[in-house]
Image (cartoon, rainbow, N blue to C red; front, top):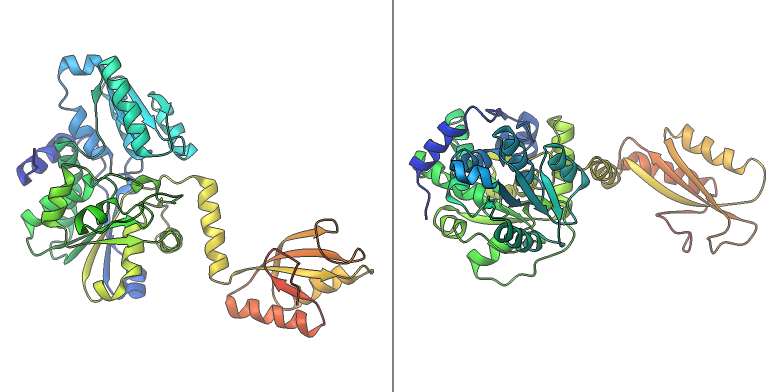
Length: 407
């Protein structure tokens, strides 16, 4: 079965009372950074913080009375599961959600909080899918697929209807790809409204399933990614032909670029994005020449990121920018030495946020100690100034976590 613009318009009517008409705004700062005119569609403003509600309602609202009585099942890395669980509860339908064991705790908790039965199975979405199919057959449940269902694809396509209505003269859209439901539906809608609009998909570089399927280029797939929402090893059978027909190019986003994009969205737009949600910005920043001077719409597809992981991303970004400096110092065992070190750092304007002190787990002489400093700085040059002041004072130090090669 294929999907046409009429299906997407019908889905828009069906779901309109159950979703948020999310804002789409121009980002002046990201436009300056990227060289493109950047417009962001904030799908993280949906109640479950992701676009998946659109497809879930489109499917659930059209279940027969008998199907509602049987109940539904879905496999999900998080956002689809939350959407199905929430709207199934709202419509009085029992739901089972099968999730990979690696799913972030926050997403599992939200699905349970919405009243669904949660089953954790396997390491990947493919593992969860196999378990979900077994349960569906055994319990005669209706399967609500996250992307390989024409009703779901039509629901996801309503994102493009709203984006094109808000900014009719967009020249390009950048859309995250997992199984492809979002970009397939959006591509059909966008090209029906504006055939010249260029569609760009983006996958996590560790999971390039759709890229490989479209290009014919064999690529390894797997690994720990911050974008678990698009960590799909097998492209959708319904979505693949639509992507081949409508999508200009599929880009691959590195883990570092997605972390950087999460941090930028937090600091610039004051909004929280998960890894998959930040992938469109990561692709834009990773290929600036491709989009320079163009009016580009980005889909911020979701904001469900574990708080601890978000904290790590922020700190890692500070370290990359040189605003968080880690030093290992060979400390002499004599009174006042630690005070001398902290005075030098303080006089240089550094803010010490953490100190560790070790005499046991070090290759230093027994009379010496290995002291670690985490220091907040204004920028990379400020950090370098602090290092130079310490070295000018005769302090032996190195950057990093080991004292084995102190200079």
